[in-house]
Each structure stands twice: as structure tokens, then as C-alpha cells.
Length: 570
Image 1 (tube, rainbow, N blue to C red):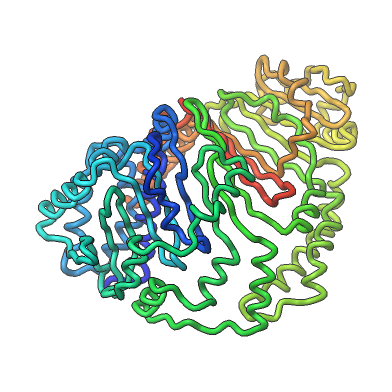
Image 2: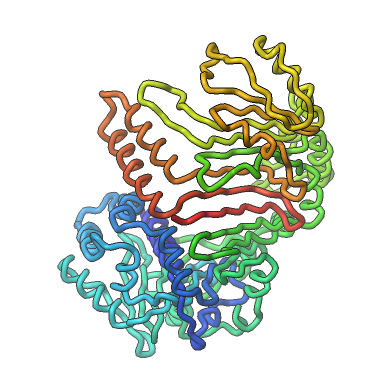
């Protein structure tokens, strides 16, 4: 028997994967049928393409996510395995094989056209309560039905159909469960959802969008406000709302959720006053997770996610920010850059302030009681003498690798680049380096950012030219011919840019790492291990067609904790 929960998770993941992939094809506006009219204003989660992108922008997104059907099949293997686990009659296997055959050898734009999806359509993923719904605009509504017919013919079986108010929909029972994947073409919209088997008409009407909510995201402009506040100018944006999520699991269920939970045999467990109050306390501290795109152009795509925090929490965390010298020296050809910064001197005070409430009023709800022990452990670590001892020496570390070559016979690759350590007293860092490496004993640096040659250190495996330079608040070392020219730039720090973490890689490095990992497999490696490594190489080879370089960073701001990504396209 197929594990019901695994099947549900697999299909939801499949819907999410498909929705995420197709999200990036936006270019043609349509003044009618705004999909946000179907989204309840109190939805716990939403991701929407609320306005059009140009065709050039849509194809830029296509380049970034331009996976072939073969690579998509590899990425979807966990979903496929979950769907087929324990199957005895081969029904799912035949359907999946027919599905794969329908799209074999096609790229995403071809798949997009085959299904009749609109290049520029406004799409939305949202919840009616917890029940997921995906709505996608169609350019050729009949094309989707034709694709379903071809899949049915290849599989030798027909998908079950039902009708509500004259609207036909397909449904597929998930294994031996009482749940269905439902699909419908309503006017010019493709609708996907998960519903209970034989769900009441009220639930189906709500899921398919035949009944509009009394208050929608279109009418209350909530998503527009999120887009404006966070600069998500592409119009591709969404959020998970903590309070709405809490209401969805504690308030009376929506019709779809009631049917869904009944099918799963899950009763609504009342939340007592103590736990209810503490859940609200958490939801108030972290109101929302907001996500979307700030820029979509022919050469660059930029995304942003913000974990919103209560203002006093965010303002307290901002005391941990510290400058990070080195970021200005990165360019689109740099192989790798990684940096960390934190004001360790402020750490005990920040932790004490954040945990004060928990210490005065410990968590009592059984589901949250472990937070008390976590808080104690964090406070103990924040006053660790070894940690605080380094607080006066360094507040940031930044490493840049411009070129990298990983030979088969070495564990450490050949590379050129630099290391920068920021701190209030870089001269003390130089003194520590002298005590650890005797060859540096005669090296003298002035805090004028002037590159100074270092003696060769073959005993450390460093054969390329070495240089060092120092400023008032940073010490930098370069390795490789010509890399010393970057030292003055590496020592510079922009006071307005103080991320906690940055990590950037070019796409070629993914290929290098995947190939090296495959070469390092022992001769007697299991077939599964070798297949996994070969799959990693196959996927890595796609990356250079998708992007040239990608960089992520984590910041603390007055809004909360921000996760941003900038991708340079090929």
C-alpha cells in the first residue's frame, strides 16, 4: 500500500515545483480576470505574479531556470519514488511514464507551449485555509486538454472526471488515500489543487474558484502594499503570514480544510489558552516571511526574502552588524567569495536583551517548552571566554578566490585570491601571524594599504607570490601573480554595507566541484553512490546555461532578517 502522507507530500511538492518553474514566464498583460480576486485576504500563504513582465524579461527568467525535461526528471526523482513506493497495480507507474514521454526532449518553453500556458500570464499559488491552490493563465485552453488526452492514451487509462455547475475537472486519487489531485480548465485558467475524495460541493467550488471570497487580495491591496514596502518591483511576490497560519490551524476550518482533514482522519485539537497565548506571542514576534523579485532584466535577476521581526527585536539585532572589507573587489568572473561579519563585543548584550522576556516568563506550552533550554544554551555560548577573546581582534573575515583549478592528484586546489580580516586593531593580527609563522618575522606593514611582498612559504604549500597590506581597520593577504593590485580595494569597507554573511560562486565552479567529487570516488564505490555523483555532474553542467554567477547574502535590518540573491545571467 502506498504511504498516504508520502503521496500527499510528493504531489504537493510536484505542484510547487511545476508552479515555481512556470512562474518565470511572464510578459503579456491582461486587464481582465485578475487571479488575486480568487485569493482570500486572510490566506496564510501566497506567491503571485501580479503584473506582467516583458517578453525579454520572461526569457531572462527562462535562461536562469532553463532546465531541460531530462534534468527536471532527475530533480523529480524523489517525488516519483514517493508516488511509486509500495504500488502493486502499476497505475501510477504507467501515468508517470506517459507524463515523461509527453515532455521528453523538450525545454521549459516548449513544455510551456505544449500545455497552452500563457507566456506572460499572471499566476498565483495560495491557500484556502491550508488547502493549496494553483491558478495559471492559459493562452490556448484546449492545448492542456489535448495534452491530457495524449497522456491518457500512452498510459492506457483515463483520468476520472467530474462536473460541478457545468465545469468539468479531472481528478486522480493519491494511492490508497482519500485524497485527490484535481485539475480543471475554467475559462482561460488552469487550476490545480488537493481535495478530499468526494469533497462537498462547497469545498470544490471554493478550490476551483467558482465562488469568490468576500474579501480578496485584489480588493484590499495587501499584496500591493508588500510589493511597495519591500521594493519587489517585478510584481512576483508573496508571503507566509504567521497570524493567518495560526488562525488556519486553530479557528473553525474552511470547507476545503474540513474535507481534507476528515479524509486524513485528523481531528481539530483545541488549543488551550496557555498555548494559544504563546503561539500568538511567537506570531507577533515574527509576523511574516515575505519573498519576491526586486529586479528582472535581460542580464540580472535579483530576489529578496525578509523574515519580518517585531521592531524591538530587529533593532536589537542590528547592534551585531559590523563592516566587511573586501566585497568591492568581487567581479562577475570571480570564482568564489565568502564572508562573515559580526560585532562580537555586542553579542552578550544582544543575547541578554532578546532572552529577557523568556527568562522572566518561561514558555509553558509543551510544544514550546524546549525553547527554554535553547535560550539557556545560547546565553551560555554568548559569554564563552574564547569567543569574547577574539571580539577585540576581528569583526569580519572575507575570502576571495578569483581563479581555481582542482587537479586529480591533490586535495587542495590551486587558486589565486585574497583573505581579508577586519578589526579594530589589525596590527595585533599581524603580530599574531608573526608568532605563528616565523617567516613573517621581518615583515613590516604600514596602515596605508600599500602592498608589501611576503617571503615564500613552500612549507605551507604556498608557492605563488604572496603580498600583504594593512589599513586602519583591516589586514589583507593575497596569493597569485597580480592579485596584489586588488589589495587597496579589498581593504575598503562600505559603512552602509554590513551583511552577516555573503556567499558567491560562478557556475563553472559548480562543474569543477562536481567533476572532482566524481573523480574522487573509490573504485569500489556502490552503484548508488556513483549514480548520485554522475547525476550531480549532469545537473552542474546545466548551470552555465542558466547563470554566470550567483551571490547570496544575509543582512539584519529594521525590517528583520533579509536574505537576498543576485544572479548574473549568461
